[in-house]
Length: 471
Image (cartoon, rainbow, N blue to C red; front, side, top):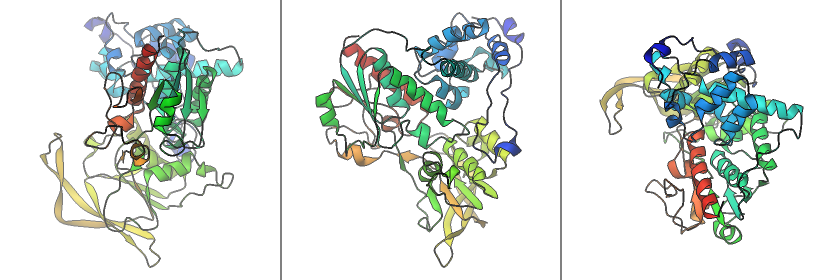
């Protein structure tokens, strides 16, 4: 393990260059510009190369972090990529959207100084360098050969859990069919996360890599409707369910059916998957909002608020019933939102939405809150301050309070055991469900979580499938 003295002498963390706030708040180009080669080498040199790297314990897919960073420092980026890719099917995605500060970087020994190695930024740099090299010289980056297995696997959904499971199985030589309900593969990576945080060409490139491994994608196939678990189980040796949890949760306050009140799912899907930001070049219209209010304080809420700014809003407020210290969004996303002009109405909760004669939203009534005693989760419960209400003008409200399981596939598969919360019950070690040979992972098992946790579940299930089919 690195010594305290060596940790004390490490250079400061290399900052990530970004678009200026005044510029980026009006475009959908990626905010973070990425490291240059010199920056990446300098950041990699900060790694202490610990004998027992604690950072790996924080990675749900167990990337050999110390080893790939060593190769970045040595200048061998292709070797660094191979090290990452052996564990992570979507490194260019993870390097951008994973909450590294709570995972790998949170376990870095330099965290004690507040300056952990920028593992996510280095992963992004390595993945982007690889993709750029492959684009420059098509055919120069063939899939790495691996052990061969015989069998056929179906993955329902094409979000991070299914893509990871598909990658693990395909790398072992299995035939893999991925069934996606929408017209574009990627799941939440394409319909949920905005391009300024995760460019769609990056997702497309990662999916292209899976196609090169032999994965077949079948679009416009709805799990529980046009594809059935029982039928897929008959035609495949194993089935993985990774359909996510895409049913939005609403506030349950009066006026929520007014024109101008959206779930974050619908709003972001219109903008991202429907490319409404390019209207009229694309046919999907967006709902124009001059004064936008977003309810919630997670990453989805930050995505919705920052998207509304880019769609031309004059003002955007994020309403949250607790304080900033309790906001679940990544610190970086909150900071970026603030820099771009998003305003925060903290310790506030909606009481009702107010409309005009045409049932169009014109304002929301907010109740001022204060933090009381801790609840069962250990967090202080927000309680109303008597008589403290106010109206906030808004013509577009976006509810970003989370999601729950969509019942379409579950109702069509009655033999699939569910938890008390309505999610699929699966073995935490293997991902196998109550139906032998049928596996599940990601948000449909855990409820709404992170991309990397979904990938970890997909990887475990994929490894178990490969093991059973003889690789």
